[in-house]
Image (cartoon, rainbow, N blue to C red; front, side, top):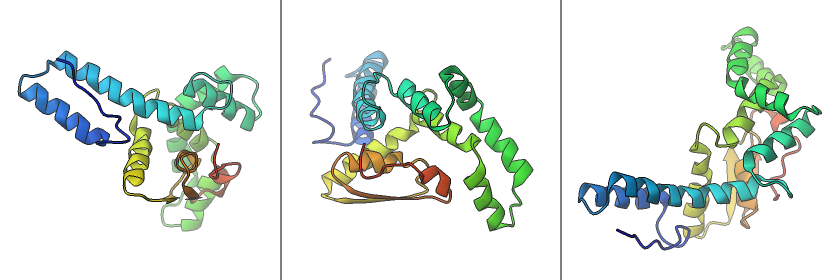
Length: 192
């Protein structure tokens, strides 16, 4: 069975489209394999939007682009080493947190986020979509906002400001806020 897709950005949002597809499986109009194929097509559109917002000129894949950008930012010539740091970033964040943070002290928490480099590696890896596609929720939010005629975007807990970059690249007046002022340094929420 072939399903005709209106472009997601003009029609239904991804969760609604996936729900309709799954309903087709439950009604035996689609097989599980057909569902998976259609799901991938829908997710690919979101992935392309995400990658287009975050990739540097001349790059072909979001992972390599983000790793090379981070390597440049931390002044490390070895992109493989940067990737290694990203892969263990979540463990390093946990270790640093246990060693440095007094949970009752807001100053301690703010200092942690301003000084930790491990969190930067952890965030960059998350944005590559290598192990987790939850960053695509930013694309979902973008499409939801566009459908409703929104023009401004504010991201609290913005991290490295990828949401702001995505929204700004689609014509939104964008602002980012985060507990870590060091993460926002160099972020360009006005667009790529």
